[in-house]
Image (cartoon, rainbow, N blue to C red; front, side):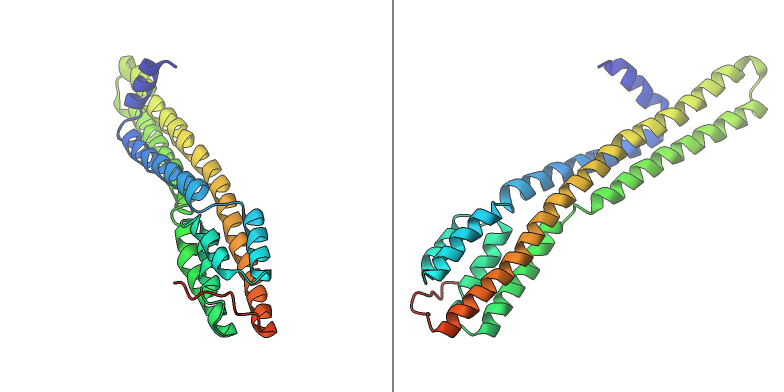
Length: 221
């Protein structure tokens, strides 16, 4: 990679390039932060996790099910499931409320900042477009105000500003859009797991209550 050419292109783009650079830093920060949280903190193998939870609930071993949730304390699904399990010996309404309350607490954390990537992608693109328009205005203005011997140099300067702003705006915008699509798919997967499995757990615990099997429950908070 020729860094001298990149530096020259950045300088040719003028002040708009600094605005695009700021947006690129913010985009990169959000992508890294969301990747770490969505893959290493909030995510887990929902299918395998719920298979173990179901087995423990059906065997009336609520304490062990809660301990299993504690092995993944930051995982969104585990937090929601634990909230329901800690009310396993309460009424059906309390179980439902516990699951819903924890879901409402967890979902904003899972969804946080991912949606802003799309807005930042649009901002970077618009900044590039604005630089392009300014460059073209300067190019046309130079035709009327610059002497004939300086005209080619002035046109080259403003056209370079226009094209480099467009290019750098797209360089930031396209990866931001791709990251948004990818991270939103991971976010949706986590949310879908929470919605499906919280209802599944509620049904399991309600069936357990109605059958009178409450001896192995726990009131752990």
